[in-house]
Length: 71
Image 1 (cartoon, rainbow, N blue to C red):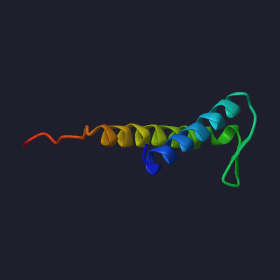
Image 2 (image 1 turned 90 degrees about the horizontal axis):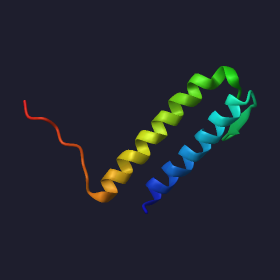
Image 3 (image 1 turned 180 degrees about the horizontal axis):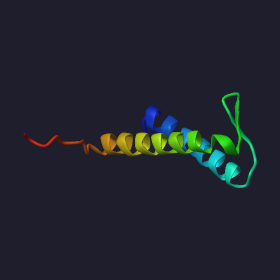
Image 4 (image 1 turned 180 degrees about the vertical axis):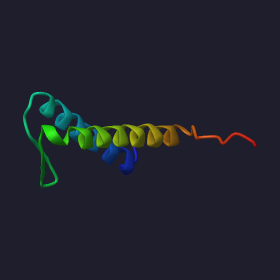
């Protein structure tokens, strides 16, 4: 597994933990910043971002790329 994919998976795991904590009305800290329930929209955006990164890096690793449609 590439270092990029490993990092992306670790980031995704952290943001999942943050999401679960906020769902329980708890705070969660990542890289020195503490997130609370009012930050839920930011946490969800970051969660979606890292999901996409993991998917893209996994596809690249398997040799599956994106193809642009001919115009």
